[in-house]
Image (cartoon, rainbow, N blue to C red; front, top):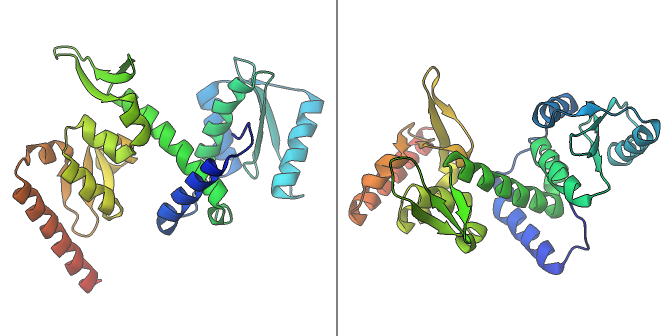
Length: 265
């Protein structure tokens, strides 16, 4: 949520994110009913029946989506944030006397809703989306591994294990999800560099006791499936490769399999 004048540095960062990822971006915007269900499940709001607020939401939806049909649902979260969602288009409006309470709700809905094909052409929208999604994914990553934030750093302090430093705030802020995930899993920079450059060739996976290997978000991955060959790499297995030549041999084999797949396809 933009709450102050946008700076040239912000615009430059958004453009850089857009240019870096534009080739791999696809429309992922969900419909209004799905967004409404997500919001109600996550925030457990109360209905907010106020005609003036409903009119504000309806006007904002009209400006964003045109004069099409709208099915406006209005809510108030437990901490007083007012939210209106169009269950047709997925357009939404968030307001509160305390702007600090609005921002995380707006950001969450913006990321959860995703972007349509038109929005993917705007580096401002794409840049905001990618920056916010990365921030949310980082939060989920440290929660998954139960990391503790103290003294400007993130620590692991699990039962039956020694407390140890994972990374400092500076690394957390500047790193991407691959950098954080691989640091937590104690993987070297050679592996970070290779998978960062080739991540589009792999599908993040986790294991479910009933369903087997299932796709997941990168922050939640325990495995990476090589798309061309179907081979699944366990992050714990990658830990065991400590000789650089062995890792480069693995990379070369994956490249060979990828080229073979491309020729056959």
